Length: 337
Image (cartoon, rainbow, N blue to C red; front, side, top):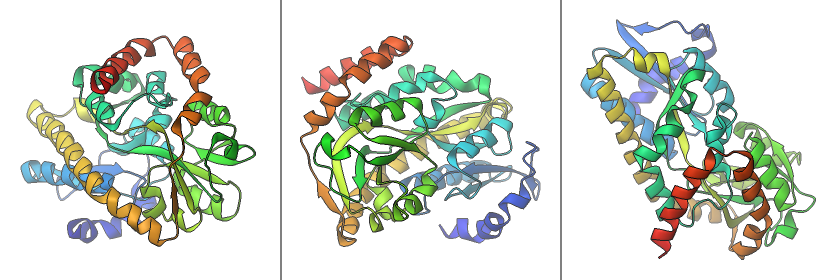
């Protein structure tokens, strides 16, 4: 953490000046600067995992690379960060699968509500490198690819009023990630969907532009949404990873030896991020309760029933998803017994 502050604060404040967004390489004392953008705070597991990514690379290739991490959407929204990775203006970014869905609809698989039957099944699927490869490499023609996944827990509703059943969503305007599937999902639950940048959510709830949002527990504390939305409902509609994406040209131009280090760093990033997630989520709930947030545990089957037709519709319209969906169901059945 100290390392990031020591070398990064000045750069962060000058980020928009530093980038001409032309994709030109940047160097610092002869080292290739490797820039990474994400939308979370410096306390978030994503950032902790990226610090491990940075450390792993610089411990082994510190004479060649200077890895710099930009949190809190300092380089722009999550969508903007994807565009910057595309052009090579930055090298890596953490992206939601909802945003990646607009580049290749194979990422729509993660937007299917209630895709995974348990956290155990979710993790086992994500650790299946063979299954993930076709997803990770699907956006190479767009100039980027996924290099690893980051645990983002379970997505649930939180709002300014209690949500005990789907009926409580009627007439509500809820923020969703910017993907057509997530918009349809929210509408199936009975609410109006409001796609917007994650960084805009706090103010939108505070100013009553929206009634709530859907995300994991960290949104309540790290992003302070628990200050303006006091009811968090564990309806568990999605278990969705975040993806660390990298610029294809940058990755392909690495020497085999350097690429091996970057690939190993990605594995380390996921390992550390998941450990941090597991440790922090319990404390996060305690902090949220101290903020006055009430946790609600509804009958999940009521919410599942609302999206059965949407599940069928997604699989019928996007036939490339069916083989992946079937493999995931095998894992679900194996774990559920």
